[in-house]
Image 1 (cartoon, rainbow, N blue to C red):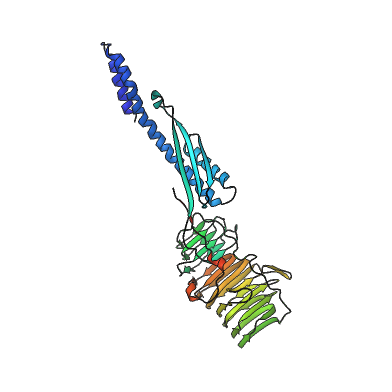
Image 2: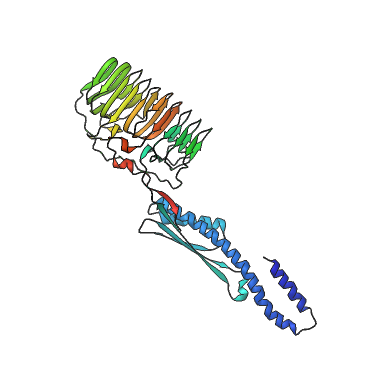
Amino acid sequence: MLRPLLAAYRLAHSFFRREDGSIVPLFALAIVPVIGFVGASIDYTRANGLKAKLQSALDAAVIVGARDGTSNRDAIAQQTFGANVAAQTNAAATATFTLNADGSYTGTATAAVATDFMGLLGVSSVNLAVKATAAVATKPAKPFCVMALNTTEPAALQLSGNSSVQISAPDCTIMVNSNAVPAVDTSGTASINSAENCFVGTTRSIGNSSVTPSPDAACKPKPDPFANKYDKPTPGPCGYTDFSASGGTVTLQPGVYCGGINISGQTTVTFAPGLYVVKDGVLSSSGGSVLTGNGVTFFLTGAGAGLQISGTADWHLVASSSGPFPGFIFFLDPTSASGNAASTSTLSGSGELYFEGIIYLPQQQLTVTGNGTTLAAAPFTSYIADTLKFNGNGSLTINMDLSKTTVPIPAAILAGTGGLLRLVN
Protein backbone atom coordinates (compact mmCIF):
# COMPACT_ATOMS: atom_id res chain seq x y z
CA MET A 1 0.00 0.00 0.00
CA LEU A 2 3.03 2.37 0.29
CA ARG A 3 3.83 2.21 -3.43
CA PRO A 4 1.06 4.67 -4.47
CA LEU A 5 2.34 7.17 -1.90
CA LEU A 6 5.95 6.81 -3.08
CA ALA A 7 4.84 7.28 -6.67
CA ALA A 8 2.91 10.40 -5.73
CA TYR A 9 5.90 11.73 -3.83
CA ARG A 10 8.27 11.19 -6.75
CA LEU A 11 5.85 12.84 -9.14
CA ALA A 12 5.53 15.82 -6.84
CA HIS A 13 9.26 16.07 -6.43
CA SER A 14 9.80 16.11 -10.18
CA PHE A 15 7.25 18.87 -10.58
CA PHE A 16 8.82 21.00 -7.88
CA ARG A 17 12.18 20.77 -9.64
CA ARG A 18 10.75 22.18 -12.87
CA GLU A 19 11.71 25.76 -13.73
CA ASP A 20 8.15 26.56 -14.69
CA GLY A 21 7.06 27.65 -11.24
CA SER A 22 3.47 28.34 -12.29
CA ILE A 23 2.55 24.70 -12.06
CA VAL A 24 4.04 24.20 -8.59
CA PRO A 25 1.28 25.90 -6.57
CA LEU A 26 -1.42 24.15 -8.56
CA PHE A 27 0.18 20.77 -8.10
CA ALA A 28 0.80 21.40 -4.41
CA LEU A 29 -2.88 21.99 -3.95
CA ALA A 30 -3.85 18.93 -5.99
CA ILE A 31 -1.43 16.45 -4.45
CA VAL A 32 -2.71 16.91 -0.89
CA PRO A 33 -6.13 15.22 -1.47
CA VAL A 34 -4.49 12.57 -3.66
CA ILE A 35 -2.12 11.60 -0.89
CA GLY A 36 -4.98 11.82 1.62
CA PHE A 37 -7.26 9.52 -0.34
CA VAL A 38 -4.50 6.98 -1.01
CA GLY A 39 -3.55 7.07 2.66
CA ALA A 40 -7.19 6.63 3.64
CA SER A 41 -7.23 3.22 2.01
CA ILE A 42 -4.25 2.24 4.15
CA ASP A 43 -5.90 3.53 7.34
CA TYR A 44 -9.20 1.77 6.58
CA THR A 45 -7.46 -1.50 5.77
CA ARG A 46 -5.68 -1.38 9.11
CA ALA A 47 -8.91 -0.44 10.88
CA ASN A 48 -10.77 -3.38 9.35
CA GLY A 49 -8.04 -5.72 10.53
CA LEU A 50 -8.35 -4.33 14.05
CA LYS A 51 -12.14 -4.64 13.88
CA ALA A 52 -11.86 -8.36 13.06
CA LYS A 53 -9.58 -8.85 16.09
CA LEU A 54 -11.96 -6.83 18.24
CA GLN A 55 -14.85 -9.06 17.11
CA SER A 56 -12.86 -12.20 17.90
CA ALA A 57 -12.07 -10.92 21.39
CA LEU A 58 -15.73 -10.07 22.02
CA ASP A 59 -16.94 -13.45 20.71
CA ALA A 60 -14.67 -15.24 23.16
CA ALA A 61 -15.79 -12.99 26.01
CA VAL A 62 -19.55 -13.57 25.57
CA ILE A 63 -19.05 -17.35 25.32
CA VAL A 64 -17.01 -17.38 28.54
CA GLY A 65 -19.47 -15.10 30.32
CA ALA A 66 -22.50 -17.11 29.23
CA ARG A 67 -20.81 -20.35 30.21
CA ASP A 68 -20.01 -18.99 33.70
CA GLY A 69 -23.72 -18.46 34.33
CA THR A 70 -23.24 -16.72 37.71
CA SER A 71 -23.52 -13.14 38.95
CA ASN A 72 -19.79 -12.88 38.25
CA ARG A 73 -20.29 -13.41 34.52
CA ASP A 74 -19.69 -9.76 33.56
CA ALA A 75 -16.36 -9.63 35.39
CA ILE A 76 -15.27 -12.88 33.74
CA ALA A 77 -16.31 -11.57 30.34
CA GLN A 78 -14.47 -8.27 30.87
CA GLN A 79 -11.32 -10.07 31.95
CA THR A 80 -11.42 -12.34 28.91
CA PHE A 81 -12.09 -9.42 26.55
CA GLY A 82 -9.29 -7.30 27.99
CA ALA A 83 -6.76 -10.11 27.81
CA ASN A 84 -7.60 -10.92 24.18
CA VAL A 85 -7.61 -7.28 23.08
CA ALA A 86 -4.25 -6.66 24.74
CA ALA A 87 -2.79 -9.75 23.07
CA GLN A 88 -4.09 -8.92 19.57
CA THR A 89 -4.20 -5.11 19.30
CA ASN A 90 -2.83 -1.93 20.84
CA ALA A 91 -6.17 -0.18 20.57
CA ALA A 92 -7.97 1.28 23.58
CA ALA A 93 -11.26 -0.66 23.59
CA THR A 94 -14.22 -0.79 25.96
CA ALA A 95 -16.92 -3.42 26.25
CA THR A 96 -20.27 -3.77 27.99
CA PHE A 97 -22.22 -6.98 28.62
CA THR A 98 -25.92 -7.64 29.15
CA LEU A 99 -27.91 -10.71 30.22
CA ASN A 100 -31.06 -10.63 28.10
CA ALA A 101 -34.56 -11.60 29.20
CA ASP A 102 -34.50 -14.72 27.00
CA GLY A 103 -31.34 -15.97 28.70
CA SER A 104 -28.96 -15.00 25.91
CA TYR A 105 -25.87 -12.95 26.71
CA THR A 106 -24.83 -9.93 24.61
CA GLY A 107 -21.63 -7.92 24.44
CA THR A 108 -20.84 -4.70 22.59
CA ALA A 109 -17.40 -3.20 22.16
CA THR A 110 -16.05 0.05 20.76
CA ALA A 111 -12.58 1.39 19.97
CA ALA A 112 -11.09 4.51 18.36
CA VAL A 113 -8.15 3.85 16.05
CA ALA A 114 -5.83 6.78 15.33
CA THR A 115 -5.18 7.42 11.61
CA ASP A 116 -1.79 7.96 10.00
CA PHE A 117 -2.77 9.57 6.70
CA MET A 118 -6.40 10.63 6.97
CA GLY A 119 -5.39 13.53 9.18
CA LEU A 120 -4.61 15.35 5.95
CA LEU A 121 -8.36 15.25 5.32
CA GLY A 122 -9.23 16.28 8.85
CA VAL A 123 -10.01 12.74 10.16
CA SER A 124 -7.83 11.94 13.17
CA SER A 125 -9.40 8.59 14.13
CA VAL A 126 -11.74 5.80 12.97
CA ASN A 127 -14.43 4.56 15.37
CA LEU A 128 -15.03 0.79 15.50
CA ALA A 129 -18.07 -0.99 16.97
CA VAL A 130 -18.80 -4.73 17.19
CA LYS A 131 -21.53 -6.86 18.80
CA ALA A 132 -21.86 -10.54 19.77
CA THR A 133 -24.57 -12.63 21.41
CA ALA A 134 -24.26 -16.12 22.85
CA ALA A 135 -27.35 -18.28 23.33
CA VAL A 136 -28.23 -21.86 24.06
CA ALA A 137 -29.28 -23.69 20.93
CA THR A 138 -32.60 -25.36 21.59
CA LYS A 139 -32.68 -29.12 21.21
CA PRO A 140 -34.45 -32.07 22.82
CA ALA A 141 -33.13 -33.02 26.25
CA LYS A 142 -30.90 -36.07 26.30
CA PRO A 143 -31.37 -38.40 29.32
CA PHE A 144 -28.34 -39.11 31.49
CA CYS A 145 -27.27 -42.74 31.09
CA VAL A 146 -23.79 -42.32 32.62
CA MET A 147 -23.06 -39.57 35.13
CA ALA A 148 -19.88 -39.00 37.15
CA LEU A 149 -20.78 -36.54 39.92
CA ASN A 150 -17.34 -35.63 41.31
CA THR A 151 -16.32 -32.11 40.26
CA THR A 152 -12.52 -32.32 40.73
CA GLU A 153 -11.32 -35.93 40.55
CA PRO A 154 -8.88 -36.74 37.70
CA ALA A 155 -10.13 -39.51 35.39
CA ALA A 156 -13.60 -39.36 36.96
CA LEU A 157 -14.66 -41.52 34.01
CA GLN A 158 -12.03 -44.07 33.03
CA LEU A 159 -12.05 -46.79 30.39
CA SER A 160 -9.11 -49.09 29.92
CA GLY A 161 -8.15 -52.38 28.33
CA ASN A 162 -10.29 -53.61 25.48
CA SER A 163 -13.53 -52.47 27.05
CA SER A 164 -15.95 -50.18 25.29
CA VAL A 165 -18.87 -48.01 26.20
CA GLN A 166 -21.45 -48.37 23.46
CA ILE A 167 -24.51 -46.19 23.65
CA SER A 168 -27.03 -47.81 21.36
CA ALA A 169 -29.93 -45.38 21.96
CA PRO A 170 -29.94 -42.11 20.03
CA ASP A 171 -31.05 -39.99 23.03
CA CYS A 172 -28.45 -40.56 25.72
CA THR A 173 -25.95 -38.27 27.46
CA ILE A 174 -22.67 -39.17 29.16
CA MET A 175 -22.08 -36.49 31.79
CA VAL A 176 -18.78 -35.94 33.64
CA ASN A 177 -18.72 -33.06 36.13
CA SER A 178 -15.00 -33.14 36.85
CA ASN A 179 -12.97 -30.14 35.70
CA ALA A 180 -9.72 -32.10 35.92
CA VAL A 181 -7.08 -32.53 33.23
CA PRO A 182 -8.08 -35.11 32.19
CA ALA A 183 -11.62 -35.63 33.44
CA VAL A 184 -12.15 -38.55 31.04
CA ASP A 185 -9.37 -41.06 30.38
CA THR A 186 -9.63 -43.74 27.70
CA SER A 187 -6.96 -46.20 26.59
CA GLY A 188 -6.48 -49.44 24.67
CA THR A 189 -9.37 -49.99 22.29
CA ALA A 190 -11.91 -48.44 24.64
CA SER A 191 -14.50 -46.22 23.02
CA ILE A 192 -17.33 -43.91 23.95
CA ASN A 193 -20.08 -43.58 21.39
CA SER A 194 -23.13 -41.68 22.57
CA ALA A 195 -25.65 -39.16 21.34
CA GLU A 196 -24.01 -36.44 23.44
CA ASN A 197 -20.90 -36.13 25.62
CA CYS A 198 -20.77 -33.39 28.23
CA PHE A 199 -17.34 -33.33 29.91
CA VAL A 200 -16.46 -30.28 32.01
CA GLY A 201 -12.75 -31.13 31.99
CA THR A 202 -10.54 -32.44 29.22
CA THR A 203 -10.32 -35.84 27.55
CA ARG A 204 -7.22 -37.99 27.15
CA SER A 205 -7.36 -40.81 24.60
CA ILE A 206 -4.44 -43.24 24.33
CA GLY A 207 -3.88 -45.96 21.73
CA ASN A 208 -6.90 -46.75 19.58
CA SER A 209 -9.44 -45.39 22.05
CA SER A 210 -11.95 -42.82 20.87
CA VAL A 211 -14.75 -40.52 21.98
CA THR A 212 -17.70 -39.84 19.67
CA PRO A 213 -19.15 -37.27 19.29
CA SER A 214 -16.67 -34.59 20.40
CA PRO A 215 -17.49 -33.32 23.91
CA ASP A 216 -19.63 -30.21 24.26
CA ALA A 217 -17.15 -27.32 24.53
CA ALA A 218 -19.61 -25.30 26.63
CA CYS A 219 -20.40 -28.07 29.12
CA LYS A 220 -21.11 -26.95 32.68
CA PRO A 221 -21.40 -29.17 35.79
CA LYS A 222 -24.78 -30.65 36.59
CA PRO A 223 -25.75 -31.18 40.23
CA ASP A 224 -26.69 -34.59 41.54
CA PRO A 225 -30.20 -34.96 40.10
CA PHE A 226 -31.44 -36.94 43.10
CA ALA A 227 -29.76 -35.21 46.05
CA ASN A 228 -32.38 -34.46 48.70
CA LYS A 229 -35.18 -35.45 46.33
CA TYR A 230 -36.28 -38.62 48.14
CA ASP A 231 -37.23 -39.34 51.74
CA LYS A 232 -34.98 -42.17 52.83
CA PRO A 233 -36.81 -44.85 54.80
CA THR A 234 -35.78 -45.51 58.38
CA PRO A 235 -34.83 -49.20 58.59
CA GLY A 236 -36.97 -51.20 60.97
CA PRO A 237 -35.74 -54.14 63.03
CA CYS A 238 -33.55 -56.69 61.31
CA GLY A 239 -35.58 -59.31 59.49
CA TYR A 240 -32.42 -61.18 58.50
CA THR A 241 -28.88 -61.00 59.85
CA ASP A 242 -25.75 -61.90 57.85
CA PHE A 243 -27.89 -63.70 55.28
CA SER A 244 -26.04 -66.05 52.97
CA ALA A 245 -26.95 -68.75 50.50
CA SER A 246 -24.71 -71.20 48.65
CA GLY A 247 -26.20 -73.72 46.28
CA GLY A 248 -29.78 -74.72 45.60
CA THR A 249 -32.82 -72.54 44.88
CA VAL A 250 -33.85 -69.65 47.10
CA THR A 251 -36.70 -67.12 47.03
CA LEU A 252 -36.03 -64.00 49.06
CA GLN A 253 -38.65 -61.64 50.45
CA PRO A 254 -38.45 -57.86 50.91
CA GLY A 255 -37.26 -56.72 54.32
CA VAL A 256 -34.29 -55.49 56.32
CA TYR A 257 -31.12 -57.51 55.78
CA CYS A 258 -28.64 -56.49 58.48
CA GLY A 259 -25.03 -57.35 57.76
CA GLY A 260 -25.69 -57.70 54.03
CA ILE A 261 -26.68 -60.42 51.57
CA ASN A 262 -24.07 -62.92 50.37
CA ILE A 263 -24.81 -65.31 47.49
CA SER A 264 -22.14 -67.78 46.38
CA GLY A 265 -21.74 -70.98 44.41
CA GLN A 266 -24.32 -72.35 41.97
CA THR A 267 -27.34 -70.72 43.56
CA THR A 268 -30.59 -69.73 41.88
CA VAL A 269 -32.12 -66.75 43.66
CA THR A 270 -35.47 -65.11 43.00
CA PHE A 271 -36.14 -61.75 44.65
CA ALA A 272 -39.86 -61.23 45.25
CA PRO A 273 -41.12 -57.73 44.33
CA GLY A 274 -40.56 -55.00 46.90
CA LEU A 275 -37.96 -53.01 48.84
CA TYR A 276 -34.81 -54.71 50.15
CA VAL A 277 -32.94 -52.74 52.81
CA VAL A 278 -29.32 -53.88 52.97
CA LYS A 279 -28.01 -52.38 56.22
CA ASP A 280 -24.43 -52.28 57.52
CA GLY A 281 -23.11 -54.62 54.86
CA VAL A 282 -22.83 -55.35 51.17
CA LEU A 283 -24.93 -57.09 48.58
CA SER A 284 -22.48 -59.60 47.16
CA SER A 285 -22.43 -62.53 44.82
CA SER A 286 -19.71 -64.83 43.53
CA GLY A 287 -19.53 -68.04 41.56
CA GLY A 288 -22.07 -69.01 38.94
CA SER A 289 -25.33 -68.00 40.59
CA VAL A 290 -28.43 -66.85 38.73
CA LEU A 291 -30.27 -63.97 40.39
CA THR A 292 -33.54 -62.50 39.12
CA GLY A 293 -36.05 -59.97 40.39
CA ASN A 294 -38.92 -58.09 38.80
CA GLY A 295 -40.17 -54.94 40.57
CA VAL A 296 -37.34 -54.73 43.11
CA THR A 297 -35.29 -51.96 44.71
CA PHE A 298 -32.24 -52.35 46.94
CA PHE A 299 -31.69 -49.56 49.47
CA LEU A 300 -28.05 -49.71 50.62
CA THR A 301 -27.46 -47.95 53.94
CA GLY A 302 -25.25 -47.99 57.00
CA ALA A 303 -21.63 -48.81 57.71
CA GLY A 304 -19.85 -50.34 54.73
CA ALA A 305 -22.92 -50.46 52.50
CA GLY A 306 -22.22 -51.20 48.83
CA LEU A 307 -22.11 -53.77 46.01
CA GLN A 308 -19.54 -56.51 45.47
CA ILE A 309 -20.61 -58.60 42.48
CA SER A 310 -18.08 -60.95 40.89
CA GLY A 311 -17.65 -64.37 39.28
CA THR A 312 -19.86 -65.68 36.50
CA ALA A 313 -23.17 -64.81 38.12
CA ASP A 314 -26.07 -63.74 35.90
CA TRP A 315 -28.18 -60.86 37.23
CA HIS A 316 -31.55 -59.91 35.76
CA LEU A 317 -33.21 -57.14 37.76
CA VAL A 318 -36.09 -54.81 36.85
CA ALA A 319 -36.70 -51.79 39.07
CA SER A 320 -39.83 -51.34 41.14
CA SER A 321 -42.58 -49.03 39.90
CA SER A 322 -43.69 -48.12 43.41
CA GLY A 323 -42.30 -47.68 46.89
CA PRO A 324 -39.92 -44.96 48.08
CA PHE A 325 -37.60 -45.21 45.02
CA PRO A 326 -39.61 -46.01 41.88
CA GLY A 327 -37.34 -46.51 38.88
CA PHE A 328 -34.25 -47.37 40.97
CA ILE A 329 -32.60 -50.78 41.22
CA PHE A 330 -29.88 -49.68 43.65
CA PHE A 331 -30.16 -46.55 45.80
CA LEU A 332 -27.18 -45.81 48.06
CA ASP A 333 -27.41 -43.80 51.26
CA PRO A 334 -23.83 -42.46 51.67
CA THR A 335 -24.23 -41.51 55.34
CA SER A 336 -26.55 -42.78 58.06
CA ALA A 337 -26.86 -42.98 61.82
CA SER A 338 -25.09 -46.35 61.89
CA GLY A 339 -22.10 -45.24 59.76
CA ASN A 340 -20.87 -44.29 56.32
CA ALA A 341 -21.24 -46.45 53.25
CA ALA A 342 -18.23 -48.03 51.59
CA SER A 343 -16.20 -45.79 49.28
CA THR A 344 -16.35 -48.24 46.38
CA SER A 345 -18.67 -50.71 44.70
CA THR A 346 -17.72 -53.33 42.14
CA LEU A 347 -19.46 -55.15 39.32
CA SER A 348 -17.02 -57.65 37.86
CA GLY A 349 -16.79 -61.06 36.28
CA SER A 350 -17.80 -62.69 33.04
CA GLY A 351 -21.49 -63.09 33.78
CA GLU A 352 -24.36 -61.19 32.22
CA LEU A 353 -25.76 -58.21 34.08
CA TYR A 354 -29.21 -56.98 33.07
CA PHE A 355 -30.29 -53.93 35.03
CA GLU A 356 -33.48 -52.16 33.92
CA GLY A 357 -33.53 -48.99 35.96
CA ILE A 358 -31.16 -46.62 37.75
CA ILE A 359 -27.98 -47.61 39.59
CA TYR A 360 -27.44 -44.69 41.95
CA LEU A 361 -24.23 -44.76 44.01
CA PRO A 362 -23.38 -41.19 45.07
CA GLN A 363 -20.00 -40.68 46.81
CA GLN A 364 -18.81 -44.07 45.60
CA GLN A 365 -16.40 -45.14 42.92
CA LEU A 366 -18.10 -47.76 40.77
CA THR A 367 -15.76 -50.16 38.98
CA VAL A 368 -17.12 -52.38 36.24
CA THR A 369 -14.70 -55.11 35.17
CA GLY A 370 -15.26 -58.15 33.04
CA ASN A 371 -14.27 -60.33 30.14
CA GLY A 372 -17.74 -61.05 28.84
CA THR A 373 -20.82 -58.99 28.12
CA THR A 374 -20.79 -56.73 31.11
CA LEU A 375 -24.27 -55.43 30.58
CA ALA A 376 -27.09 -57.05 28.66
CA ALA A 377 -29.25 -54.83 26.51
CA ALA A 378 -31.92 -53.67 28.93
CA PRO A 379 -34.13 -51.02 27.31
CA PHE A 380 -33.34 -48.48 30.04
CA THR A 381 -30.25 -48.30 32.24
CA SER A 382 -28.57 -45.37 33.96
CA TYR A 383 -25.33 -45.38 35.99
CA ILE A 384 -24.83 -42.47 38.42
CA ALA A 385 -21.87 -42.53 40.79
CA ASP A 386 -19.17 -40.27 42.19
CA THR A 387 -16.65 -41.71 39.73
CA LEU A 388 -16.85 -44.59 37.25
CA LYS A 389 -14.21 -46.97 35.91
CA PHE A 390 -14.72 -49.59 33.20
CA ASN A 391 -11.92 -52.11 32.79
CA GLY A 392 -11.18 -55.43 31.10
CA ASN A 393 -12.13 -56.99 27.82
CA GLY A 394 -15.87 -56.78 28.14
CA SER A 395 -18.38 -54.35 26.73
CA LEU A 396 -20.94 -52.05 28.23
CA THR A 397 -24.04 -51.45 26.16
CA ILE A 398 -26.45 -48.92 27.59
CA ASN A 399 -29.86 -48.43 26.05
CA MET A 400 -32.23 -45.53 26.52
CA ASP A 401 -35.27 -46.64 24.55
CA LEU A 402 -37.88 -45.32 26.95
CA SER A 403 -40.71 -46.60 24.78
CA LYS A 404 -39.75 -50.20 25.57
CA THR A 405 -39.71 -50.07 29.35
CA THR A 406 -42.51 -50.03 31.90
CA VAL A 407 -40.18 -48.76 34.62
CA PRO A 408 -41.08 -45.19 35.67
CA ILE A 409 -38.34 -42.76 34.67
CA PRO A 410 -37.65 -39.95 37.19
CA ALA A 411 -37.96 -36.55 35.56
CA ALA A 412 -34.49 -35.52 36.79
CA ILE A 413 -32.84 -38.18 34.63
CA LEU A 414 -34.52 -36.78 31.54
CA ALA A 415 -33.21 -33.23 32.00
CA GLY A 416 -30.05 -33.78 30.02
CA THR A 417 -27.71 -30.90 29.32
CA GLY A 418 -30.41 -28.72 27.76
CA GLY A 419 -28.46 -27.38 24.79
CA LEU A 420 -25.18 -26.07 23.48
CA LEU A 421 -23.90 -22.51 23.69
CA ARG A 422 -23.34 -20.86 20.33
CA LEU A 423 -22.89 -17.40 18.85
CA VAL A 424 -26.08 -16.16 17.25
CA ASN A 425 -24.78 -12.86 15.83
